[in-house]
Structures are given as structure tokens and as C-alpha cells.
Image 1 (cartoon, helix red, strand yellow):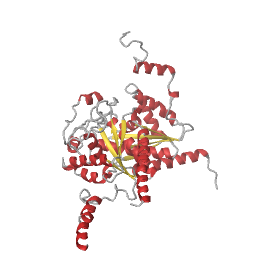
Image 2: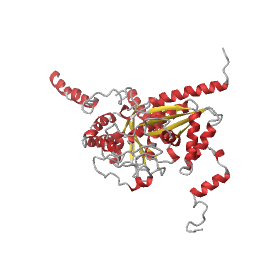
Image 3: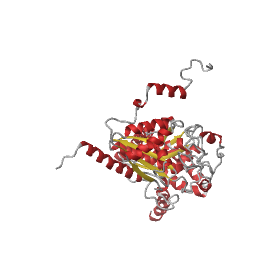
Image 4: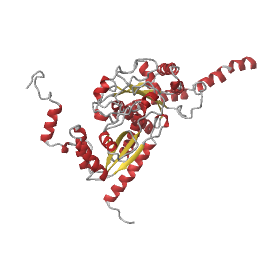
Length: 215
Length: 223
């Protein structure tokens, strides 16, 4: 039998695992059996574009910028991103009111509002179905032993960049076969200066002894 | 009832209690976007409490045509051994402030300024809710489903029971959205293979009409 090298084993295993995650997402529970999600998996090339887009949002969203920096590190090791999206309009006819309209028909007729992150207003149950699929994919990744984290920021970016088409809402599951879990305790992405600057900007009262004091 | 069968029945109910706690644990530790806690999970395993919930669902089924299936759900839930209700506590009063536009308002400030639907019988959830916050409930629900599957326990997911529980005011005050997972430790899942007209024709109604009603007549005639 031919010897397979570790890099090939890990990369091939990762590719297969993403397919199995897709199956888990595709077959997950959903209200009314509405299997209307769209799903794609992207590799390092698209991830790099997504990272640059996220990073460009730095002024608007420190969170997106942080995730962009993180993805640039992530793509140095085997990784993939499963992107799942769905349309925003309701086909349930539940008339539940969660979207702010009394009936599904009213919500479906309402003016569409475009933005970089999603197109609204959207049906709450469409969102629930979409996010259950996301959780099922993440759960499959966890069981397959992959490092995994769910990212709204990367999903929003994929939507804004039309990497996934014909959807209004989008969330992503990022998976990695890095040598250590790259998704949590990401302290290495902060320099002390940048951390202090961001912290002081976001939490100005934290270091202030008396809240009433004005500098 | 034979002693051994009675013992089995008691153990089955004990198994439901243990399983419900483990399902609650899995739902609680499932991910939350933003990492902010906002979901609670409530176990209803007393048959009288489940019956109260089913009756509220039946009342709601009469409110509008699109909710007629509530009574079918109620018939299923009567066979459940426990109902777990997951809530979202921040979707009404505490939008995520990330301006995601999923609710159709470009910024969260617009959503805060928007008037909520009135507290009227035909409104199940008083939207517009913060969709980003309410989405956390999907993770809680899938965490619960995932655990139920691991434990080999039958489950069904119902929004009707969540809406009814909110209406009964048995959930936390800030609840804006709620979904229910019903679980059953029985040999045949009461949540699958559901015939048409299940609200009228089910094991209870069939038992009532075909056994309880006929038995006295049979006894009178053949005694």
C-alpha cells in the first residue's frame, strides 16, 4: 500500500469532513420541512478575499476587522468555510408577528431594505431554519474532531461580496485542521498598544475612578 | 397492574426527568452569537401542566385559520412526557447593536424606535424583534435536538407550544420569542406518523369512543 503523507491525510480528511457537515446541515430539523437553504464551501483563495473585505470594515466594525485579521492567520493551515444562506421572505403562513408584521403576506410585500450585512425584513422562522442548519453543521464538525466556530461576520461578508448568490441572509461555519485550536483565546492578534487603544475607546468609563468626572 | 410493570412505568418517568435535564444542559451550553447569554430553558414535566399548555394551544387554534394546526400539535403534546421551552430574553428590549438589517431596519436605533405589534389575541410574538438576538434560540433548539438524538429519545419541535407558554405567562417576563421541544420516552414516537385529523382522531379519542363507550354496552348485553 502506498504511503500517504500527513498533509494529504489531513487535507483530504478536512475536505471530506466539510462534505459531511454539509449533509448534516442539509438534513437538519426545520420547521414545515422547508429545505430552502443554499450552501457553498470556499477555500483559502476566497477566504483571503473575505478577510480583506472584513479588514476594510475596520472603522465601522472592530469585530469584523478582528475576524479579518484572524482569517489571515487561519489560512496558513488547512481550513475551509461553509457558507449557508436563505431567502428572507416567509413561505410558512404562520402569521406569528415576530417580524413586526401581522401576517406573512404583509411582510413579504414590505419594501426590501439593502445593507452590507443582510437584506431585511426577514421571516424569523426562515432565520431559525437557517441557524439550525448552521448549528447542525457545527455539531458535525465538532464530532468529526475539527476546530470550528460559527461566524456571522464572514457570512455577512460572503453575502456582500456575492460569493454566495440568490440569498438574503447568510451565516458561516469556519473549520480548521490547525495544530492548535485557532478560534478561541485569540490573544496573539492583539498588540498591547492596539488592545489598550481599542479598550479605552470602547470602555471609557472602565478606568475612570469617578464617573461624574470630565477630563 | 403487575408490580414489575408498575416499576417499569416509574423508571420510564424517572428517565424522562434525567433526560430532560441533560437536554437542558446541552441547549444551555450551545453557542450564542456575541457570547451574550439570553436564552433560558424551562422543563414542563408535570402532566397537569402539559395539559394546561395543550388547552391554551387549543384556545389559540381557534383564533385564526393559519393557527388551526395548533390543536393538532396539542394532541401530540398530550402524549409527550416532557416539554422543554427555550426562550429568547433580549430580542425585545435589548437589540444586538450590530446594525445587521435582518429585521429590515438599517440600524438598531430604528428598531428601538419602532412600535411593537399590540398585545392582541391574533399576535403570537410582538415583533419586530431583534432577529440577530432571537436567532440564538436556534442554537439552543439544535443543542437540545442533538442531545435528544444522542440519548436516543424521541422529540418534536413546536412553535405553537412556545407561543402558548408565553401567553400563559409562565415564562420569564422579558421573553419575546419561545420555541418548544417535546420529548417522549416511549416505544413509538408520538411525534411521527401523525394521521390527518389528528386533533379529533387520536389514541385518546379512539380509546374513548371505541372502548370506553362500547364496553358498558358489551357488558350489559353479554352479562
